[in-house]
Image 1: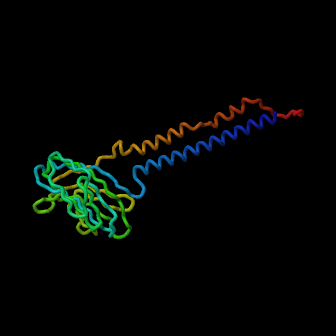
Image 2: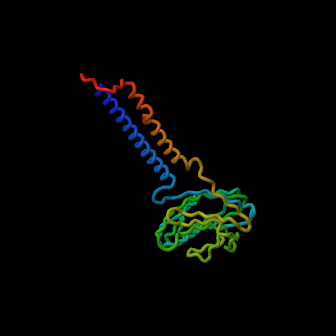
Image 3: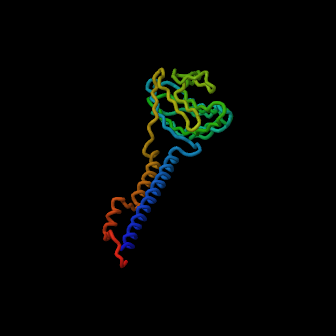
Length: 255
């Protein structure tokens, strides 16, 4: 009887230990799956980040204009680029011009290999514009971060059509009256939209859609499935299992 009771207790301890190990493995697998999902979204060493920009141009509808995409080198290394994959307007677009450090067509890619890259899109403004941009995010750690500036210019004079609050003429990488600025800062690019402009040209970057969040959701779902699939032993059931065997308070001398 003593041997039976001892074996029962040992089995209960073994089951409890096995349950603890299974829960630890499930947490580890779930953490790895979550980390994988984050890497799918953010990427490890900086690859291209993509944004969609919506621009309301109603206040300048009918005005000839040039969209000026300028990539200005700040850290002295040829380590960044921008790709303009799509420009969609409610009116026909004019000519596209690769000025310097620019290739393709379309999509157009601008780099900072020569210290400066520029792409121009001529058009007559309608009520709205949608721009699909992707850009790298590298910084050498020396000098100033590279800077992308999107400006709206008068095609006749090359002066800006808009007075905006993104005006940094005294910066190491100067920009005046931009609609959009991307600084290639350490860790991740910093995107700034003009919050005030004259005339008013509201800009917006939509939140990531379902497609962008799908890898992260899939990773989390995988972790949950693994966790649910692992057998569990509740500590509350262990005493019950042990109580199914007769308990003895005294040893029989014949055993």
